Picture 1: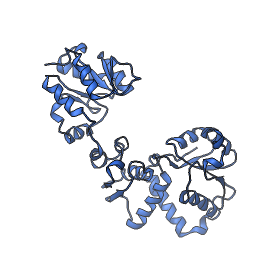
Picture 2: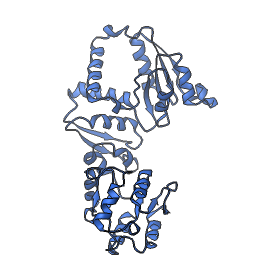
Picture 3: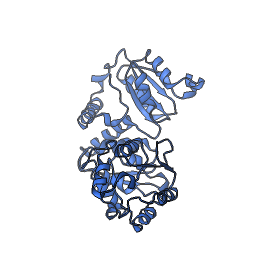
Length: 335
């Protein structure tokens, strides 16, 4: 059973085929007027919608099918506390396919895991909107005749705009694509989202150093402390360091192209070998479970940054605290 939760589930070939199919439906609607005879679409819209909900219903009716559903959470059992999983499990007994919109990111994915019929994500929070992306791609194709070698501008709310996130995801897999992002500072594309997209063109310009990081790094270097990196990034790590003029501060830099990715501790071992230090002279600053596992596997203490649930020798929640913690490690990586 196939669900459509994220546009990245579709290959570029599948997208191209869907766009051609849509163009044929537009040109020959009578040939598709009975394609969904006897089928029922359930529209489960837990947040208000006009265009998306009516588009789904109109499309199903045009294909000969029928629709049922609700247009807000208040008109469903969600208002009484019923979970998404229970709602979808029940509705899948009444319909052949479900189109679902929800204000919470990931809700359609949860629904797809409980549904007995295919689920289409009609928008989940600030996350994804794959069907809007398919519509946008159809428009681009009809206007430009291609998806390759385009410069595409996005203006407005890039932080929460799920249509932006999905469309950039889809277009980024075509060749010769460039993006121009225009937004107020407070609505910039989030780094966590930007990192999923073409690195140099989209993600890198959006990234910023956390306050206090540069000062702490320079403070460490002034005291003769060696600095290295073990990252699961690939070559984009060098672009990131260059962006902030930090390339000369770290040696070695163990990327995923050089050593196995964390939680494998190979990068930690390589750094120890390069520096000719014992584990007791090195601290591993990290903020994830993979960092903790790599540190443990390498036999070095973890300094957990803003991650109170990680097993660590030291927990800190900002770079001022981290600096104080490092001062208490007298043998730490000094040349």
